[in-house]
Image (cartoon, rainbow, N blue to C red; front, side, top):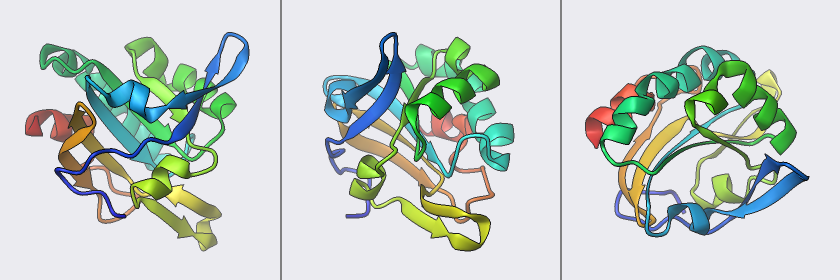
Length: 162
């Protein structure tokens, strides 16, 4: 399934780093009855992801809060330890962005955003996208044409579309 506007987000298990170590999180618990912005990207600590995508959401956090968004979530095909460290290193965690690892690509595959670039060593990663959902239903979906581009999937572009 390739996700489209109007679709209901699938439930999938993702991971975050909690006080006791990795914790499983069901996407349903984060989306049902809530307004959420979710952005996915090819990988933690990679070029455009670190210099453009995450910073665009950090800059936009006040705007998302003003529009009643309950949570802004970053999903990447990385383990929860890497996502936790990257969130701290980029300032995303301090800004209030939830950093989730989709290590098994369960969520990424379920929404049809999986992608591979063997030459770059990116195997089973995520396309770059951003979405806004209310009660688990996708209201806005922006997918980039290429992995090194962050224009329509940036925080400002998603915020403007809500």
